[in-house]
Image 1 (tube, rainbow, N blue to C red):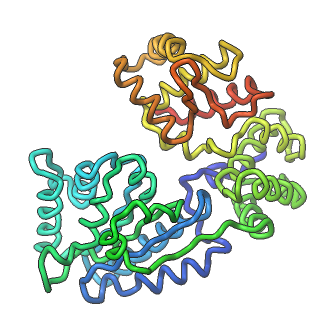
Image 2: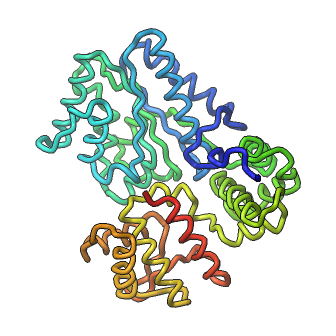
Image 3: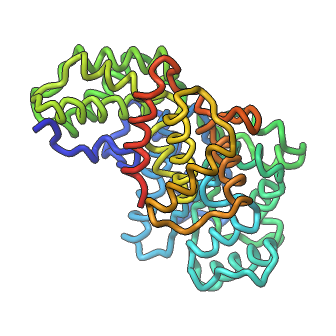
Length: 386
């Protein structure tokens, strides 16, 4: 047996310790410590840094700690996390998601976005519920929705009732690219304030510490050597911009390969094999976060590429393959319009590359090992399909 608990390498696992993010956690804790017990005036915090730097995990830890503290004091406090890339393609859907996470009875399609926000705030006020609201992937949302009005609406909640406190006491916005603020108007930028927590890329030494800790949780004793962990750390820094999610995928797939071969230890060959099958730009977390319909369309793209044995295929080939996939998986049919929308969504998320109707591929895959890469991608996407 290789694994003690492979779920410890899952992107959805929140470790008890965030190694080498102690300073960022301490700063976030200082910024949010009085949100529940202090004055009810909105505090806006920006968290920024490249993918896989622990931003979301750090904010989850802060939010859950605040909920636990308030529970001990008998206070009504909710931590609400929304990934804009996955849950909120528009302002109305965002405000609807916020409302439904506070209380499903608030969910409504008969109100405008602004009316729904007002109703949600009134609901919180009457029940004396305080909220820490976290919006992840805010830069993605603004880039593709072209609607920056949510920034103005949410950062100026206190102006809805002048002089009165609001019950959304904290707003944390998480972004990968700090240049997202350039999209905003001067008024919107001003309302953001200057509370910014930067998550810088991990060094090789820091990644080694993180991976050693996660390997100790995931693998049985003696399965993986420090030399292999050091090797993966170096590859991650050099080729994946220090993205921990990529490194964890390498650890997971190396272990799976070793286990499938009946080995009781990871070798450097297992790691090299895993690296040849995992691309830094498509992580397991990316696949897990896709909607079911996106996964089916992506599977059709992958199979079309496998059948053609070429780097690119045309949209008609993918459409034909999709019909076979739907029949085999016994899933609901997808209309042509929805098919095109899902293709574009996959491209927007950086999963596939569209250079025209006759050139659709996965450019991040290693072209010289395309078939092995696609075989692995099929297994990974099928393992995440519900």
